[in-house]
Length: 61
Image (tube, rainbow, N blue to C red; front, side, top):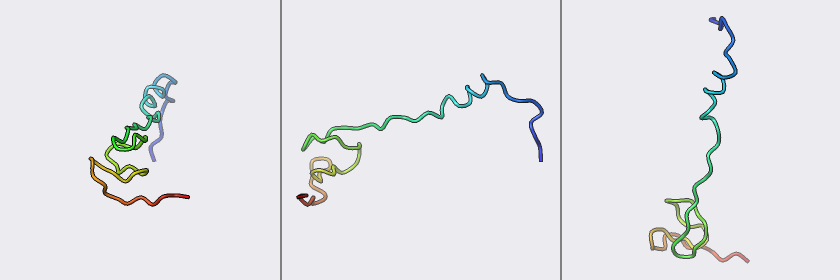
């Protein structure tokens, strides 16, 4: 099994890991109830998507 002949420098390791960071979740606003929701998803609060009610949401007590 091949093994590395020399160790990688810290700069080279850091350059490789430059894109490994976590990205923030993009959140949009529901045009119907103005709650925060994920884009291109049904609103979990009101059940609307693109101006139409797609899912009936039960009222929580």
